[in-house]
Length: 165
Length: 76
Image (cartoon, each protein chain N blue to C red):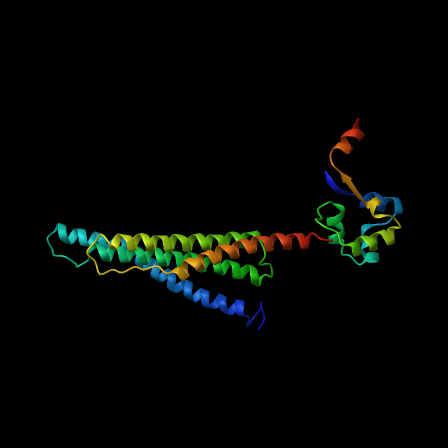
């Protein structure tokens, strides 16, 4: 399979990521609205004595957790698309891509850190919400940071090669 | 400071243009310009050999080491 061009793995990944981004964007918008609307509706209903919509603290934590997760996924999808764009133009070994990979690493770190924080919060409230983290994810985050540094060195080597006469 | 290139001076002495040198040594003008303007980070032995052969000179005629003190002493 070709590395770049029509029918290549890069172009297939780009198409897949574009669709994924649309879904993630829709989920992100939905969750953003839910983050604002659910507490307000609950507040108004209890203020006017119209009953309870049955949303507890655990549900708020779960909504917040999903919001952070989808925000991170959207950020990662955007960075990956930018990286694929440089690959399609034939110059993936640039310093910007190293920064993008590092950004992906930080985003995953924040997402996983938030997951741990939300999981910790569920311990103090009476909720059925269950948020777990996995060692594989942490290893994947480390792998992304390693990849970012490898890319940075690759970009430096590419620049040196370009300036070798 | 560091390694400086005096390719333009040697070219002038030989009355040769960069385009002509490019055609003779088989290196693109873009790459020779990188070399001439001192932007190059490295030079291959094969390129240096071809340039020296065509310009009938030694590598030392093209490459100079300037540690800063040399130019300061020359100024004095």
